[in-house]
Amino acid sequence: MINRLCIIGVGLIGGSLARALKQANACNEIVGCGRDQAELEKACDLGVIDRFELDVAHAVAGADIVVVAVPVSAMASVFSAMAGHLADNTVLTDVGSSKGSVVIAAQQAFGEVPANLVPGHPIAGTEKNGVDASFAELYQGRRVILTPLSDTRPEAIKTVRNMWQQTGAHVEEMGVQHHDEVLAATSHLPHVLAYTLVDSLAQGEVQAEIFRYAAGGFTDFTRIASSDPAMWHDICLANREALLKVLETFSGDLAKLTEAINNADSEYLMRVFKHAKAAREHFAESTVPNNQSSN
Amino acid sequence: MINRLCIIGVGLIGGSLARALKQANACNEIVGCGRDQAELEKACDLGVIDRFELDVAHAVAGADIVVVAVPVSAMASVFSAMAGHLADNTVLTDVGSSKGSVVIAAQQAFGEVPANLVPGHPIAGTEKNGVDASFAELYQGRRVILTPLSDTRPEAIKTVRNMWQQTGAHVEEMGVQHHDEVLAATSHLPHVLAYTLVDSLAQGEVQAEIFRYAAGGFTDFTRIASSDPAMWHDICLANREALLKVLETFSGDLAKLTEAINNADSEYLMRVFKHAKAAREHFAESTVPNNQSSN
Image (cartoon, rainbow over all chains, first blue to last red; front, side):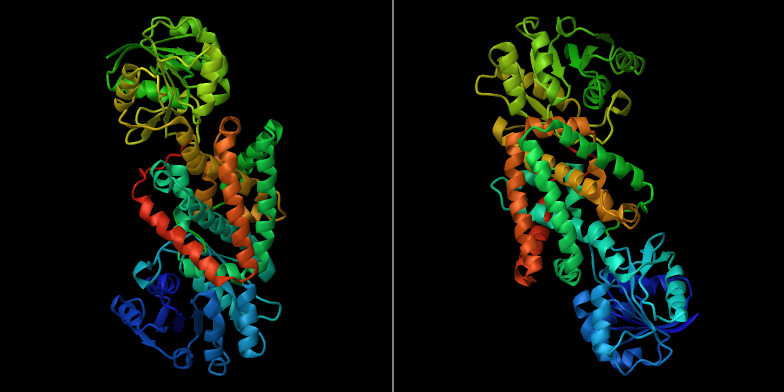
C-alpha cells in the first residue's frame, strides 16, 4: 500500500495512473500538483486526486512516491523545484517518452542522479490529453519500461514496479540508451512520418480531395498526426539524437525505393514489400493489440 | 437489371462485386473468368458466380457488362484477349488502382480506347485477397471513381454507375490524370511509406523489440504493409509518374523537418505539427470511416 502518492502533472497519463491506483485500492492519498489550478480543481471534483498543491516543494513533502508526469521539456524545472525537498525514502519516477533527456535533467537539477530515481515510460496514451481524457484502464495489458541506472536503489525499482503492476501493466527494464533507440524507431519516427505526410499533402492543390478519397489505410496511418503538437515537439527534441539516426536510415531506404520505382526495378520492389509483409506478420503477434497510440 | 455480367478476375474485388450484385438481385447471370480453375470452381461453390470460363473471348460473349478485376499489370493481356470478341453494346469497365495505365493498355489492345470503356476504381479493399475474402458489403458507403474520357458513351457511364450504386457505393467522376494524382497521394504514397518503414526497422539490430514495444499508433501505421506485395509492386509501376511526384515532395518535406530537428528549430516543428493536426481534423470529417484499406 502506498501511503501518499504525489503526481506532478495530472493530465491523461498522470490522471489515468491516479484513477487506476484508486480503483486498485493501492493508495491512501493522492496529491496532485501542476500549474493550472482549474485543471487540478477539476481533477479533485472528478475524484482523480484527493487534494492538490500548486507548489512542487509542498506537494512532494511526505510522499512515498513522486511521479513526474509533465512534458519532457518541463522535467528539468520540476526536478529543480523539488531539489532539497524530497525525503530520503521518497521514491521518484517519471513517465517521459525519452529517458536520456530525463536522466540529464535530473543530474543537472539534483547535482547527481538520485539513487531513488527510477526513470519510467508507460507505452500508452491516446491522441487526447488533459484529466478529462484520463481513465483507469489506460495501462491494462500495456508495457511500462523502467530504465534504472547501475546505482539506482533496488528497493526503489521494486516500489515503482509494484505501482505500475497494480494498474494492470506489464513492467520491463532496459537501458536508457536502448530505450531511446527503440522508441525512436517504434514511436517517434512514425509520428514524424505521419505529421510530415499530412502536412505535405495538405499543402498540395488537391488537399480537400486527398482527404475525401482517403480510405481506411490512410486514415489509420494519419490518425497519429492528431496527437498534441507541443508534446511531440518536445519529444523530437528530447530524443533528437536517436530520432535523427532512424530518420537517416529511413530516408536512405526511401531514396533507394524511390530509385527502384524510377528504374522499374521489380526485383527490388518485391524484395522490400515481401520482407515488410513477412516482418509485419511475424512480429505483429508480439505486439499488444489495442487502439491506443504510444508516445 | 443486368442480364449477363462477366467478371474477369474473381478475387476480393471481383468476388465482392458479384456478391453485392447478387444480394441486390441486380443480375440474371454472372460469368466468372480467370486463369486459376480451382479458384473459379470455389467461386461457383460459394455461389459468388453462376459459371465460369477459362478463355476470355468465350467469357465476354453475350455479356451486358464486362468488369476486368485483375491486377493492373494484367490489364493489357486481358484486353488483348477480348479484342474482337466484344459485342458492340457490351459495356467494359475495370477496377484498377491507376487509370492512366489502364487507358494506355486499352488503347494498345483495341487500337483505340473503346467508347464503351468506362475506367473505374472502387476505393475499397482489405489486406486480404482471393474469393474467400470477398463479401457483399465491401462497397457499402465507399466511393467508386469513374474516369470516363471525352468520347466515352454517356449510356456506358450510366450503366457502370448504376451497377456500382447497387452495391451501396457512392459513384463519382474525375479525369484520369487527376485520379492518378489523388490516389498517388492518398493511397500509393502511404503504402510505400509503410512498407519502407517496416522493411527499414526490420533490418535494424533491435527488430524483435521494435515490434514488441510498438503500440497502437505504430500498429495502425504499419497494418497496410501487410497488403499483397505483388499488387503493390504493380500499382507502384503503373502509377509511377504520379507516385514519383508525391514521393519527391514528401522526401523534400521530410528532409526539411529532419533539418529542423537537427537545428532544434522549435518554430518550424510546431508549425508543421500544428498544421498537420488541424488539416487532419478538418478533413477527417469528409472521409468515410471504416476499417478497410484502399488500393
